[in-house]
Image (cartoon, rainbow, N blue to C red; front, side, top):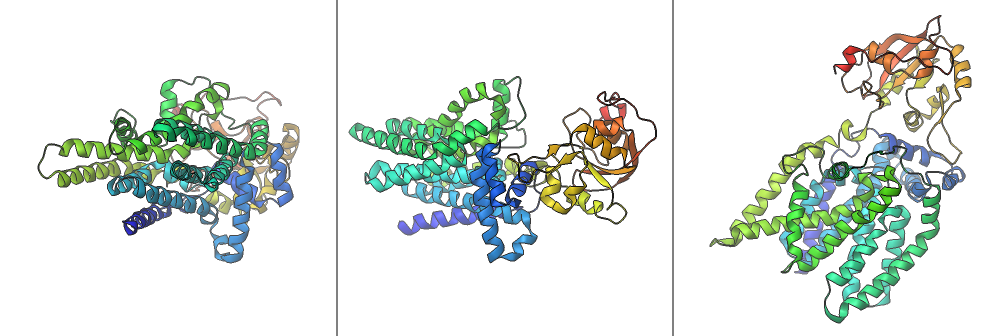
Length: 531
């Protein structure tokens, strides 16, 4: 039996390695990953200054990744030539470990088929793959949530203080990596009450409360620093409706709308799996998973009321293992229900379970593939930067259509960031994102240039999505930055650059279209609106 448990954990780990290795370095860094790259490029003193700015919540992750980057370059220098693989590898490794630990734990707690089904369901969740492959802290938070849950379960049967200490340190590390993961302790407190029976529940409840409190206190200096300095995303949602919240949450599971109530197969199976909380063989794990899956989401409601800009699915990636357990329970419930009245019950149950898993895999394949493409990770600036290095363009200044987008220039080619005209990289301030050069200064610089390069990426304005390729001169003229409009820079040449970034040479005409401070914006061209 012990060999079987180890075997299930190993098989799940190997399967996770295959999934997380699939397309790991295929796509370029997307915008947020670009900020991670720039952070790891800083000196230690300059990196530490981020504690006083909006990047404070991510500082612990940046520190760990910078340490890993230095060690990896020393031990495996070839990784320096593959930055996407280098910086995403830690997330992929801890995600594989999370699947391995979860499977090994479930194999001791429940049946083999629930263990396998849960592992597969977790890997079929597209958001688990995406954020498990991203150079951001969400995979590490999910890993720590799995470890904390396994340690909590050990506390229910082993009262030795070592487990309470380990739980406190795990919770502390999890909160340091992501403050909004703290409600997982509340899920464990609830599980102490609803999963255990008799007099044993209250000692576990109080051990959990004390250890969780100690963990939170240990994390409190960094958590308070994050809360006071961190601002979260700049996007503010003016009208958060239940339907929109559901949409954001379901995007964690699937990128494609499905006819299954619009929520995708994994969530649907998880909702069916909730019936297992009532009684039976899987009552304990079902109740624990239900608390883990739901308590952090409920705790997010008052946070979103105060800070609606925190409505992002990736902030609750750490609940996905619980939803996978519930989905596995849903498969088990349906398989048992179908086979209950037939003679060869085990064969039928296994057939139904395999059919449900394969059906989910078929429905999820497009979504799993999409998040490993540019649609899942944003645009690729590398082809445009390669063009900018050609001899005929090397002396031209560079204008990036968005301030945030210009971080990719520094992430991929630090030598070219000095060519930026309207943005300036911030290498030693408490802000990671590029700063906009004052308009007067940028205007003076542009007035001294007859030709500049415009690197244009998708923008929120209508008609500036750049979904349809090739982008036309009319669209570039419509979507170009206001300063280029005022100084009458117009398209001279468009150079084909794959990856979603437009490379255009802009030439200044003699007549200025509008006085400074009064940008003139033409109505959206009909050809663009028709797209």
